Image (cartoon, rainbow, N blue to C red; front, side, top):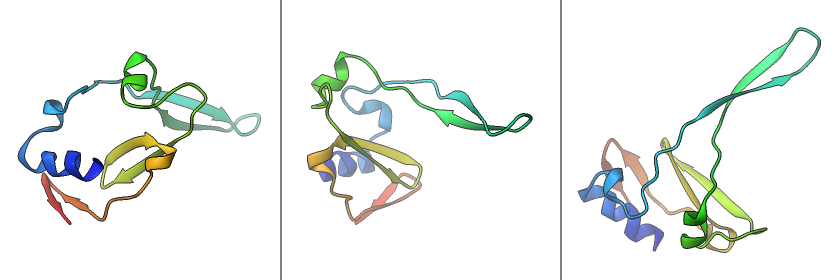
Amino acid sequence: MLKKLIAHLQKEDFSSLPGNRRLKVNCQQRERGRDERTYFPELILRGNWLQDAGIDYDSRVCVIPINGVLVVCPEGMCIKPDVQLIGRAIVY
């Protein structure tokens, strides 16, 4: 199924995928000492659409980064596809 969705991206834009969501990346900070702070991006996923995607309460997920794209899937389906994104082209 993951390979089908990735193959779909060869022909279409990300916004055409079913269940497309636009989320805001927040800035989070961690204090490492009295005067030292580290900043990092934070992305929060929540909503009933997660259940619709097969991600349920207390379950574990895998986040697979592929050339600037994050793929989130239930832990049992975590097989990194043998693909490489080059611009909008996908190479198997």
